Image (cartoon, rainbow, N blue to C red; front, side, top):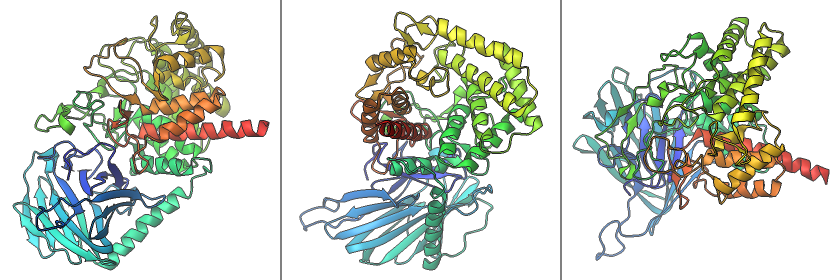
Amino acid sequence: MRPYPPIAEHGLIGDLQTCALVSSEGVLNWFCSPRFDSPSIFASLLDDSRGGYFAITADVLPVSDDEPPGTAEVVNQQLYMADTAVLMTRFLTPEGVGEVIDFMPVRDPHTVTDRHQVVRVMRGVRGTARFSLECRPRFDYGRAPHDLTFDGATARFDGPGITAYLQALGPVVLEADDTDVWASVALAEGERAAVVLTVCDADGAAPPEVNVRDMVEEFNSVRDFWHDWIGHCTYRGRWQQMVNRSAITIKLMTYAPTGAPIAAATMGLPEQEGGERNWDYRYTWVRDASLSVRAMRDLGFTDEANAFRDWLLRRLKDGGAPNGEPLQIMYRVDGDPYLTEEVLDHMEGWRGSVPVRSGNGAADQLQMDIYGEAIYALAQTGQVSNVIGYDDWQRCAALLDWLCVNWDRPDEGIWETRGGQKDFTYSRLMCWVALDRGIRQATATARPADLTRWTAARDAILEQIMTLGWSEKRHAFVQEYDSTVLDASLLLMPMVGFIAPRDPRWLSTLDAMDSELVSDSLVYRYDPEASPDGLEGSEGTFSLCSFLYVYALARAGRLHQARYSFDKMLTYANHVGLFGEEVGLTGEQLGNFPQAFTHLALITAALALDTELDQAASAG
């Protein structure tokens, strides 16, 4: 086992209420329960000695008596079973080949439960496969002790208010190691063994005894669930496999009981190794989730789009955020707005990247763009579902009335900088989107609205952006008013209809970004040296922006450049098709992993590029 494997060396499994990361060496080193945003049970990804892990790795005998154990070479391979969230890790050793199949059963995902299972099946494929098992939970981010109790083939770990049961099937004999357990098992070709980890409330009933038949049924059920779900995808384009994997990844990171997608599965993974940009992304950003609505709708997943619409409408119904604004930029998956940021100073951090933060202090920031993304999402779902009810419309109309008065305010902006509030062009752009989509929806559905007022405010924003958000010196739209700093968030301008994708101003903006923010088809968000963001260190290129760049190139008719950039960007996916937040200088993935925003942008870019390539082919 390597300490702190690369961020990209992981696959994701989940049951639509929580999830886990498994490294390509077979180490489950990130798992929280009962929800995505609960305290961790396994977190060696953030602290190798104190975080806890659940490992099933290759146990290799020495090649000769002169060599110590573990010196023989092991080749690790990892893949998903096609179009599922079932993960397979293969070990190729001198004695034979073994596999570990990992999945989390999906039973009744829309009903909140504190009981979650991780199933790990070991299989001998060729020759003799030897496995070493260690289960070392560390509750509450490694801060809480636990007790171990043995009951037959079951180990029980009791932490504060939570209990984990580890059940063994087949020739697996669990042994105690203080308050943890280990085992070693050798399987011949065709032999199987399994362990099932069940986590529940401390007062919950012990899980029933499991058998091989149960595990076969669980496997078939979860495989069929994912095949049935992805079967509803309407995409049949050139990048089917990558689009399907991105859709499954977004689904895995959506809390089914409320329909709220989280931004990423992890917390604390750095945007720069050893740096301080280490945030907790296990929450629902209004921005990220709203933009995912269009991607999922365009793939035919209307249930997911409508579920988030309902979650968003409930936030409006709640009557405002604790900071006094109509909406907060992010919430917990159940709509709780309190995300107090805490530094876990006992954790070492991934490769020494500290501080490790739980919670997110940016929740209190003012980011005016979220109103545009929220109304944009509601307008998108209105095309594929029943029109929202009168009471919900009244709340949306009241929000737009409020926006007519409040749109012209400096804020912290989309990138949640901690360098003070500014007049960000992107924030004003999305205020324009809110009013524009509100006007369209009111007109299309004959709903009561102060259209004269909304139209005046919308047009005033457009004039202001064209005057103050445009730099004659750069011949480009810029990050903030009266500046020359470029910002890749403005790649959304043509997507939301603010400007035509082949307008001269937009094409010159693309050219400016290409010369300053683009590095070998990878795109930086902005230049922190030119626009200080209040944080130390640097960051990699932002994968969301790299895919938005492909979208913009495709819509601008620059198809050769768009396709080249897209195909090159796909090479930065990890071995199972997952993307993090950023790509580092030498191609490594950085930031929390996997990142939903990146995957939804991949879908958007693929759809746009397919459409433009088809139209170009038809035109001859």
